[in-house]
Image (cartoon, rainbow, N blue to C red; front, side, top):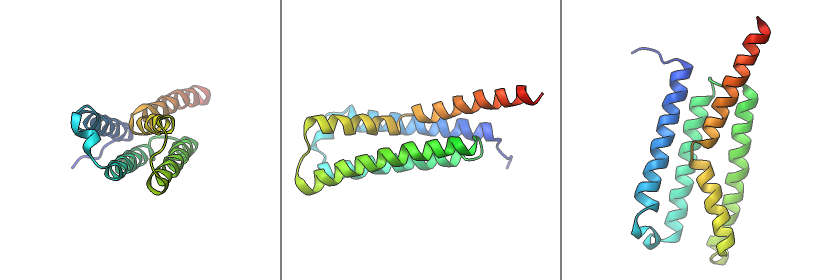
Amino acid sequence: MPKLSNKQIYWAGFIIIVIIYSLYNLYLVDVGYYQSIPRKLRHVGKLSSILIIYGIGTFALRKYTAAWMMYIWHLVHIIIIALLLLIGVYDWCFGEISAQFRNVANTLFEFLISPVIYIAVGILNSKFSTSQKSKGE
């Protein structure tokens, strides 16, 4: 079995994240029965999606990017996951949250599962690795 380069692993991670993001939006959000799924089950599904995307990104980016970029990747995810968990715990324990908090939570969730952060880290890596090579020459 041929060994994949770091760049190939990066692109494979991107493709997997895009597929998961697309499947989530096609099969769960864009269909009419999504609201009929119990709220707590939707929370578990959303958390699972976030953790899968986070794991794939961590695996694919760890050898491709610099350590400080991975720090940003982890920091962004951990902070937003913590905020979503706080909102989710409140929703589970004290009743439904307001529509404004729900919109904030949905926006943060969409941001985490979309490939935006992954691509941003890849662009930063290509920019800084190119500038490092030109400074070294």
